[in-house]
Amino acid sequence: MIKTRAKYSLGQVVRHRKHPFRGVVFDVDAEFSNTEEWYQSIPEEARPAKDQPFYHLLAEAENSFYVAYVSEQNLIADYSGEPVEHPDIYDMFGPMEDGHYPLQFQLN
Image 1 (tube, one colour):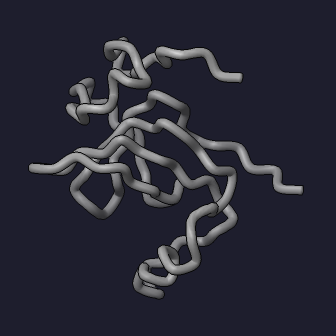
Image 2: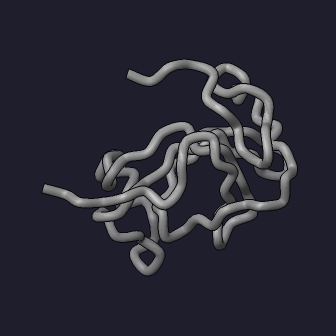
């Protein structure tokens, strides 16, 4: 049984430690849950451990928006207070409040 606790929460704004993008957490996997092909595509020296939380982000870079899948070790909290401009944010979240996006729907 895995006893993992996610460091970041749904609606929280985070940024990547090494790459220039940030995003809003919209889902969390307790451990790696993507394809082996995706995992192997990461250079071996940069491959994160699978036994940690992985976050699904509505991400933005300088000129693009996308969904990112990032290990906890590669994220840091973003306390800038700047909104994330991803066009899908308001499908899941309400307007930013105190640097965090509140869920717009009820979880089961």
